[in-house]
Image (cartoon, rainbow, N blue to C red; front, side, top):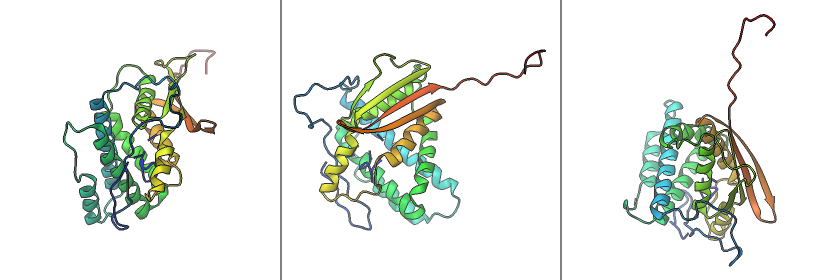
Amino acid sequence: MGGVSDRVGDPIGSGDAAGAEAGPRTAVLAAGNDRHPGAEQPRSPYRAMADAERSALWRQRLHEAEAGLTRYLVSRGNELHLTDWFVLQSELFADLPGPDAPAVEWQRVFFRGQALMERFLVLRYGEEVLGDWARSNAEVHREVEPDRGRGAADPIHRIARQAELYGSDYEFDEDAPPGAERAALTITHCAIWDYREKARRTGVQLTLASPCTYCTDALSANIRAKGYRPAHRLTNGPTGHGCRWESSAVAEPTAATDEPGES
């Protein structure tokens, strides 16, 4: 769930038009589910998330991505043309909403920023560096995402909250609720794909062929950064594109011993 040039950034409404040199046009679509009007929704524990909490999560995600990109570019040494980087930063933080602005305004800024950062990296270094960026972002995520004391369930709850931002259909396992040792979540319909197609029809330029290209790297890196083992699989069926995510505790290595009969 997670970027946008592809997702339209992790996704989006009516948007900022930009010229070819300035980067892709992005749009912000209202969150919601209009696929099956009146249909009962699957269990979605964060459906009632307050607007202020949604805004805060969009802001945190923008911070993780921009700080992670800064960290990644520093790691590449002096090969960056600083003027290009300063121009990108000015675009990322142009027209910021006020602190009390509704979540949809921070959603717009996040999608625009994700699209600009993806395009910046892909044009200069190629799509293969997106995984490196995701891992750099995860180092920032490690520091800024609170540990809420739920163990392996913490990263899965973060994925659920992100899914909620997009209006995706998702549910925790019924037979094995999220626990400290293992937690799992299934996104039965990823709304990022819906937003991408809506955006594509309005002329938005998508950098990546699939939102999963960056999203799976990013979510896996976030889980690892918190000290857990990630696992995922992508799905595509009657309910559309989706995915299943697991987070599990990493087994402690067995200590060596010199006792007779043991090796």
